[in-house]
Amino acid sequence: MPTSTTAARPARLAILTRHFSKSAGGAENYAVQLALHLAAQYPFDYCIHVFCERSDVQDTNITIHLMGRNLRRPRWIAQWLFAVWSWWQSRVGFALLHSHENTWHGNVQTVHVRPMRYNIFDVQRSPWRQGLQYLKAWTSPRLLAHLALEGLRFTGGPGKLVVAVAPKLADIIADSYGVARTRLSVVTPGMVMPPTGQTALPTAQARQTLGLPAQAWVLLVIGHNFEKKGLPAVLRSLPLLPSDVYVLVVGGAPSQVEKWRAHCARGALNGRVVFTGSLADASIAFSAADCHVHATLDDVFPLVVLEAFAAQVPVLLSVSPYCLASDLVQAAGAAWMLENPQDERAIASALSCIRQDSALRSDMLGRAAQFAARHVWSEIAKQQHQIYQQVLAKAAAALAPSQH
Image (cartoon, rainbow, N blue to C red; front, side, top):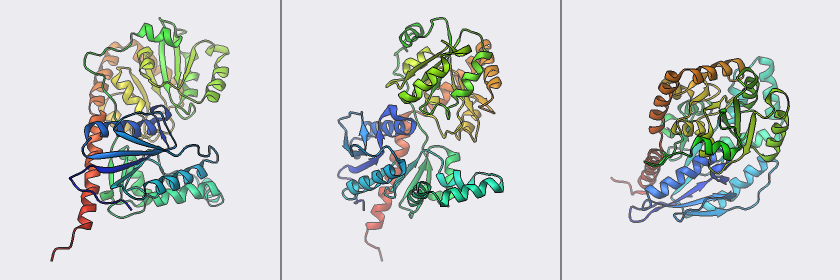
């Protein structure tokens, strides 16, 4: 069990995440950025320890504990192994346990994706398809293991708080698992605003470095799962656009990149699609881009959209339920919303409008900059700090002697 703390010394904080790396994905980047900003902003409040399988982060204010090599497959066993290891390592000596993974331990649980229970049982389907989903779930050791771990994650009393990264995700968690609203908070992703006076890499230089023509009009797609992030629809839209339009694809495992590179090396796509693989710093990609297309099929609150806003790159974004943060973005008028992210003609039409209408583009960029300014990591860290203080106060009250 976590131990109590006092105001006289920093609270020992354990952060649990399998891959503590900015380049591992959006959820992983969230965990890294939040930890770094907490360490920088509250050095006298927290003594931060990160328990993970691997990390490429170095910060003198954060102690990293490596599990080492875990199983790659099957993933459900790997998840359980990490849960057991991180529980064993952090079971004593910590006032706060903050988990970004499916674990039963952790008095703060940050949820980055829709619960599996929701995806299997709560999504509306025909009776026949729903019956198949039930049969699949109850006969699959993999799904049963994931559901069991997920169920343990959301159980607990008032002292165990759940953080969702988007308001609609909080609604789903409340409906699927009956988590009381008093235990639910929303802490969205954030972004780092460029320092005052710092200029972005010149577009021509960025394009030359990435192998793009200087005079091209560049569409940027970022993600590790190309299918889920909408790359197929973007590629289908390319033949409908002028020949000077190119696609820059960032992310993906080497095997996935080679597969899609081979697919693009023929027909109307030949030479018009550039793959970079994963980049430690995506700022060069934003410097090279004219528009960021996030035609996602399944996202909660994509960090790359905030980064595009801050980099002053116009954004195309899928509406809800494809992206659970889209209502916030749409209300702010910060992006062009795609009603059907799989409609290549709609994507091509939107891109043509953004390219040709400078007033529209300028208005979108102004609203996007305002949206980004409200979602900086320093403010996000402050919100997380307040949640930690709430947990610590409840723990202290529970340990205080009864007053009669």
